[in-house]
Each structure stands twice: as structure tokens, then as C-alpha cells.
Length: 390
Image 1 (cartoon, one colour):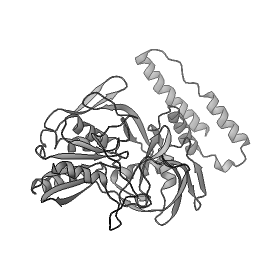
Image 2 (tube, rainbow, N blue to C red; image 1 turned 180 degrees about the vertical axis):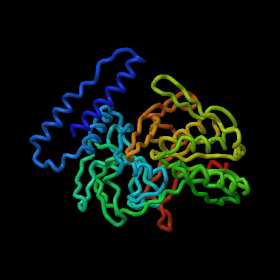
Image 3 (cartoon, rainbow, N blue to C red; image 1 turned 90 degrees about the vertical axis):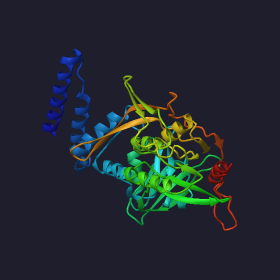
Image 4 (cartoon, rainbow, N blue to C red; image 1 turned 30 degrees about the vertical axis):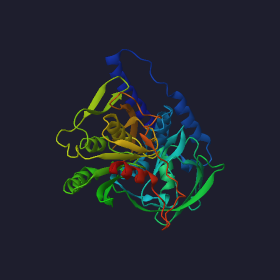
């Protein structure tokens, strides 16, 4: 450990001195207390076999990052970083919940479609108060928990169970939901044609902006273009976001020209994402966009841009409100760093963070309202189709 300490300190001081030549003299970071604590643990801690250099380094880095008090900026040790990368690839083992925060409380950003979470009735906006897994001897209150730790605790082997204690607005008490884990394959998009009153509506369900979308979206556009439709319902309900460029690609098929989103960093530098003029294939189709509290991040960028240009009415509920940009970086040992580097601004200059995007037509679904066949009535989708038939 002494060699590690010297190497870390020398490496730090070398980098700092190089920076000082550029920026002028600065006080060196005093790490003496950290080494005193480390040495004291080495001397007196009961279970010395638990003192592992690499884990301590990871812990120190995590603590440094968490001191920034930004729940979306985080350091990920190799195992947690692997889980995070699997998310964007669209396949993993778990219960099907995209996580976020509501006022610094761990919350369901959206339940993913056709997963244990959705089947159990978990809703966007549910607060997760506790995670319990008897097999893994986990009984963890979520106060102060990082997204990565929560993901690690909730995921597990197919067939195993995890219990979540949830609180839902409108309910008096918290309640437990037992979920059996399964293989989760998150589709990017699905297309269904609905016929009503002699007219055909294309219902495009956009689940998440994953890597798959770059191949799947152009194919969906081809299908719609080759079919005579009377309107399109673009459904981004419970879409937790993903790749920013995916939202720009989709928006570019509906918007003729102009700014889709602006990314502004802490130093004031701006990067503007404009309509991709090589697309613009659905400019003449009537459009309604479905949103709810589970529509977040890139989904909000798409919905916000379409609303700004009055390209189609937004139907449903106010969106989640995540308007910051995280830059992922992977390191040689498998660990990673996610850093909030900027905020997103809609074309009118507004930032949606903690605010969300308001629908043009507010419609709330009632999970207790069912049709004669016992299926839950989708009032939001019905309203969208109604508007297209006018």
C-alpha cells in the first residue's frame, strides 16, 4: 500500500505542477488526513482481510465524486460500469425499471415495457424507499443511494426475487412489491397500424433511445412511407431517454428546419443540434405525441422540439424533467465515470430540468378503468387517435 500511496501522490503532484505552469501557482491538495486514516485502519481494524487497496481507491474516488451533490455524476467500479453499459445496449437481467430521482429520492423514471415491473403495476414517479433481497442479505434504505448502487442491488439472476418498498402519490402509506427477475430485452421501437372510422393510424411506440434505434427507426419510417396513413401517434410515454443523437434523428423526420436542442456547458460554451436535412421524410403526416411522467431526457427533447414548432399536439401528462447531459468515460480497468457536463435547452431557450414539458391536452390514465374484455383502457391513446380523426 505504501508503494501505491507514493505512486498516487507523485502522479497527482506531477499533474498538478504541470497545470500550475499553465494557470499559475496553486495550493497543493492536502491528502495527509486520508493517509493517516488509511494507516490507522491498517493498525487497528479488526478484520484486516477486508482492507483491499483497489476497493479503497475506488471508495475514495466515489466519495470525491459524490461530494459534488449531483445524483447524475458518479464513479462506477467495473461491475457497476458493466451494468450501465448494458442499459444502452438494451439487454440485461433484472426487473425492468429505469431509475432517476425526485427531489433527491430514488424514483421510478419509467417501468420498461413487457417486464416484471410493468406487469406488477409499478408506475413512473413511484418513490423507492427500500430494496430488500433476502438471498443477497440486502435490506437497504435508499436515502443517499447512488443510481449505480441501486441498479446493482435491484438486478440479479433470472428467477430470483427482490422486494421494493414504494410510495405513490395519492396513497396514504408505503407498500411492498415483490418482483421476480427476468431477462430484460428492451426494444427501441414498435409499429402498429390501427383502423378506426375507415382511417388508418400509425402508432409508433418509442421505448428508448438505444443503439438499436439507429437501424430500427429508418426501417419504421420506410414502413409508414409505403403505407397510406391518415396520421401518426408518436408514443414516448415511459421512455427514459438514451442517446441524444437518437432524438435528433427522429425529430428530423418531422421538422422541416431549425434548432432541435442546444447543449450549454458550465463555461458557457454552446453546441447546437439542428435538423438533419437528409431526413425530413414525415413532414406532411399529421402527428400527435403521447407523453407522461415517465418521458425523460432525450424523450423530452424530442417532445419539446415538436411542441415548439407546433408540429403536433402533446397529449398526456407533464414529463419527468431531466435536462442535464452526462458524458460517460470508460477506463482501462473496466471502471467508468459519468459526469454532468452541460444542460439541454429547448429551441425557445428553456431548460426542462426539474420542470418537464407540459402537454397541450392533459389526459390521465386510470389503471382501474377496464373495457368489457378486462383490458385497461388507454384513454391517452384514444384521445390521440380522436384528435387525428378530426
